[in-house]
Length: 458
Image (cartoon, rainbow, N blue to C red; front, side, top):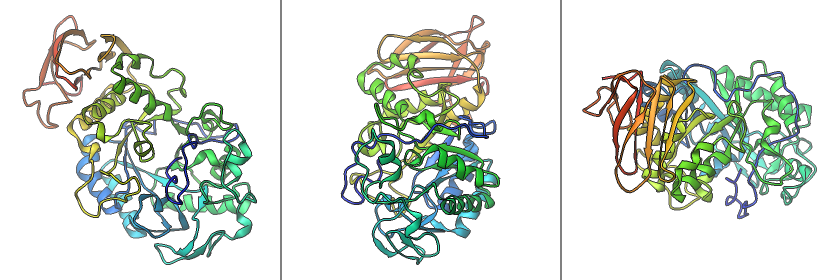
């Protein structure tokens, strides 16, 4: 969890992980969120009214199963994006909208067939003192009506040693007041907050900074909830660190940060053929949520970002085509200042979730389901292709010139729409013919892809 690195003038270069003590929990973890539509779109720092609109007009029609929204809780005032991650109470009263707007968003998204994952900041409270976005007066270790001094860990210094479990989980993340999640009162208070969100229809949670809460404590919080829903936890892998991602897989799913780093290496290094081994050295696919980037990694340089243009889009295409993990499409906003908060109007958003290449691949993901990966092909460098047995086929070209090749697609004979380039309502001339032998002769443009599936035939 690197997103506090600038909020207090500190440095979080070493903060590359998120987990706790290994425990068995009574809930099955699912890297595929419940339901047939398994792709998540994270609409980072979007107002709840705008998320509702996106669900109706973009996410629902494209076939997304889930939308992840930024924290709803009241937080410190300020224009920077990271103020959302400094809560001062559990009232829904942040800059993204009030309780009514949040509830209306959930209802609208459900009406569009999209479930809602709420980003839950439960490891810590805000630093400093002042008045929150909902009018709550606070000072460090004193948050009126929610927590007082005794509810925080006794270690009142910054985390300094990531090889020391106690330091990571009991001391303070860049000066933020670290909740004593071993306390029954704290666990009960957090569980009531999450239950409240569930009462408004929230389907699950992304647990922020899970690495800084022991797995034992997180399991106890989850056990206090009446119906916890789907959980995914922010647990960033760090070599040699005391807390590791697999400690949390008994509680819920885990964001697989090594995946985004692998994609960056492949697409920037000129060898996407290496992605044949994309699952190696990572969490099991049924435990991992995959992503090309998020708001932390796009700012710290550990992954590709929207600034990488076509290669970034191609990486998202690969993620949605590959069977490994559960894909999360990140959609943020353009920035030059790493601290900059979200745009105030309709301009400046990347709208990655709505790009034709991405929405086409969401449909691909839904169509191929759990079909086996077969017929892998690569040229040892800038191009690869594979089939999802009998259901779909994709070819990616990260090179600078066209790729002309005859591929084994595993698909039944017929004429298919290229969903990377075709409009949602029609093929618009972007068709590919698969012969009786399951083969197709393709020209894949530079820095582009071709994708076919059984749900999109001409």
